[in-house]
Image (cartoon, rainbow, N blue to C red; front, side):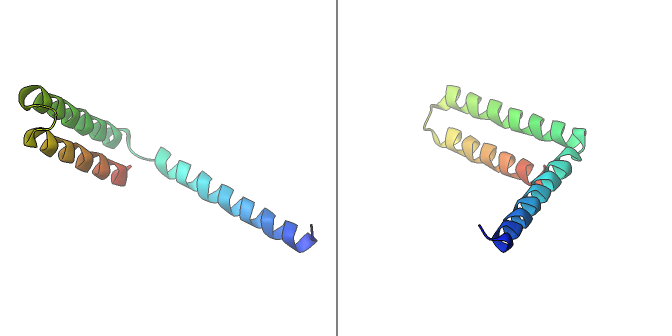
Amino acid sequence: MSHKLRKTGMAVLIGASLLLGGSVIVQAQVPPERRYHCERRIRQAEINLQRAIERHGERSRQAEKRRRELEEVRARCRGQL
């Protein structure tokens, strides 16, 4: 392996490590109350889905609506965290 290729590979490895390390630090800085509220909203959406399934059936339009709502809440929380 040439010296230039090894040097480039090492630079890529260091850059990737810095990017991964930075994303971990950013996630660690999410306020606990935001994480708590997201978890609570997701849990409530899961409960709503379960209720709709019990009341109207697995493939009812009510259950489908609650599934969409659950996915929307999860997506919003992923964007915030």
